[in-house]
Image (cartoon, rainbow, N blue to C red; front, side, top):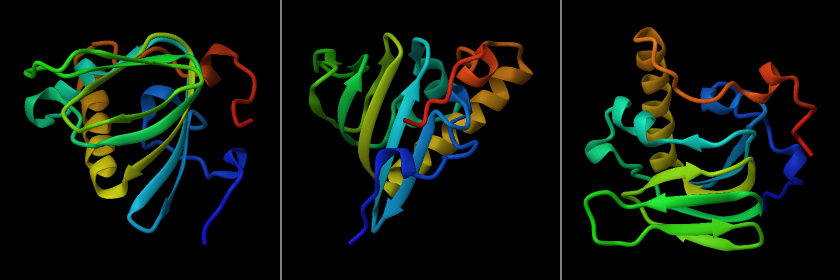
Length: 153
């Protein structure tokens, strides 16, 4: 059975350029992807989902996770579902059809269906390319360009 210390998860590389090379660490176990996301500044994914061409401008991937530090929100555009706020110390399930907003620097462990997460990551990469080409800020500068210390712990 696979297992890993969080700091030993491999770098997600450039899969989520909005948060930098070490901000997203992940590996695939079976049909699930285990990932540690470290966001160093507030991040609203709304425009990334829209520019990436995701249907309805929402994430198609359900997320199961735990927030170690920080806070995130899930909004459900086009539905009557209320906004959810998930804070440090809470486990969560966010169904597909959401927009994620990290309100502050956050550290989050997630377990996601790998194929659905790949669809989301492909769209985000596409969105960042389009937004950059159009001169639109896609996200805050990743930590390594802000002079932050190592985030892999």
